[in-house]
Amino acid sequence: MILSILILASVTMHYLDVINLPLLPPWFKAGSEEQEPNFELSANSSMITLKNWVGNSNSTTITVKSVNGFNHNVTFKIRRVRVGFLGTVEDLKFELQPHHVYLPAGGEGHCVLTVEIRDLTTLGVYYVDVDAVAGDVKHSICITVRVTD
Image (cartoon, rainbow, N blue to C red; front, top):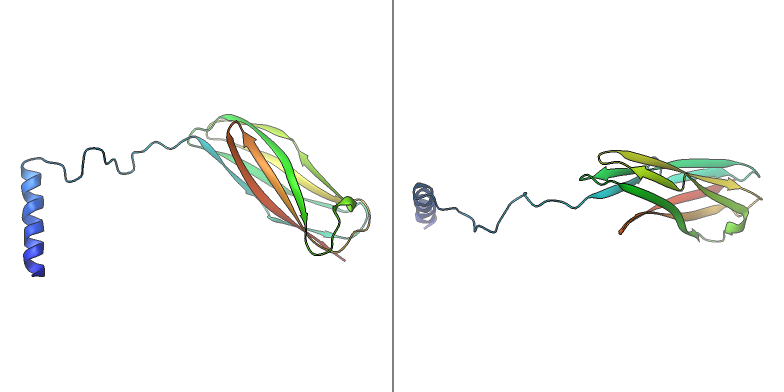
């Protein structure tokens, strides 16, 4: 049974090849769909660790990378800071520099998120959600901030 199915499939494919008929319908275009321009968002480290000393700071670099010829200004903003178990965000300073970058087609741009301890704070974990927006395209990344003693 299996042998006859294989022979039938082989004969059918040979016949279609001889008469030059496509094996797939004409609307099927494998891998030829053009992808929309977009960008990727990443960080060199998704965790920042800080010792709980006033004035202590640490940072991570956030990178946007052009995909499929994306070419646009990108704006960075901190959407929210979430607190882990018992922390308070008032004792921490969060800063993004620069707030805007121009992302050329095939290129990349960078923004630095810096977190500083303004006053002794609760030890624990904080989550910083950073948005990168360019026109109608928006991507987000979460950076974890850990405050230790």
